[in-house]
Length: 148
Image (tube, rainbow, N blue to C red; front, side, top):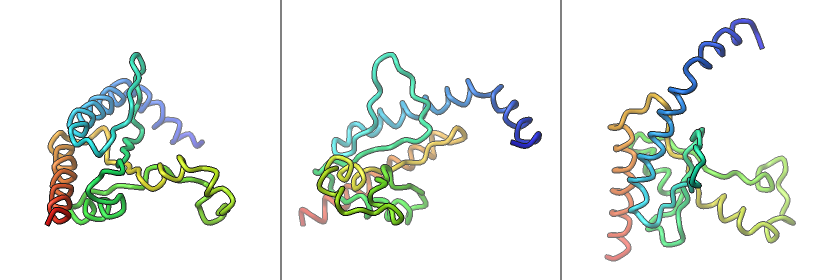
């Protein structure tokens, strides 16, 4: 670490409590707004523990009206950047090994159904609401096209 990096780090440490409080607040807002969807599972928050929400990973249930990759693309089309949630090492290029596919069914399911939603301490409530509203609109449209 350089002296400059250390100096910046020390300043950031002085802000840590505020940064974590903001991320926890945004995590709680996501939880409240997303849990009503039913098919999109927010992360568990065990009683008495306070996650720092370095990432906000949600999981699509099998009943989701849209697939993970399609949802990610449609969110991107609306200006919302997401990432794949769980990345299983046995599926990544340098370590790909088919022998593990049948041995890790839950890992594979999580790899195929999780998304990291945007969450950063400067995120506004309006930006977060836009993410949630976009997810709802995309899902409603996908569900309507399935019913038609």
